[in-house]
Amino acid sequence: MARKRIRIDLEDTDGAKYNFSLEGNVTREKMLKIFELMDLINIEEPEESVQLDSVGAKIWNIVDKYFPLGKFTSNMILEKYEDEYGEPVKLSVISTYLSRFALKGRIGREKKGKEWAYQVLKLAQREQNRV
View 1 (cartoon, rainbow, N blue to C red):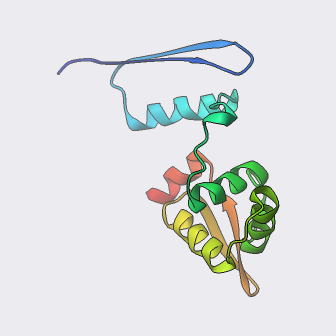
View 2 (cartoon, rainbow, N blue to C red):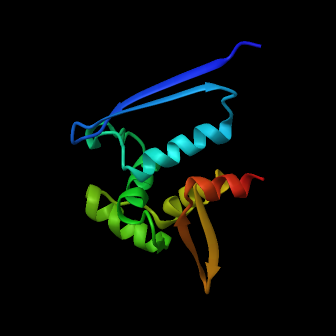
């Protein structure tokens, strides 16, 4: 079997360059660790490359921008959405997208009284939920 070889070259917004090389038995878990490391050193795509061409993308942008760590509700997303984009959106649309994000494992949700509370799942939590 041929040895796998993966090389990743990145540059952050401050101009620092990062080189990652993986050789040999490259597994999904090892790649996820590299992505977690990239997250720790805060390498991300420039803001202008974010495609906000759908309601779902706009909702995810709000979640990622304003609630990367804390818990939030669909009403909180609704408020931020209307402030950020200056356009109305129905609460049911927000709830539907948040439910889909939860089914895909991007966010977790739990019932708090009459409404759902959501929280973004980190990469390690996503993997645990899939097992």
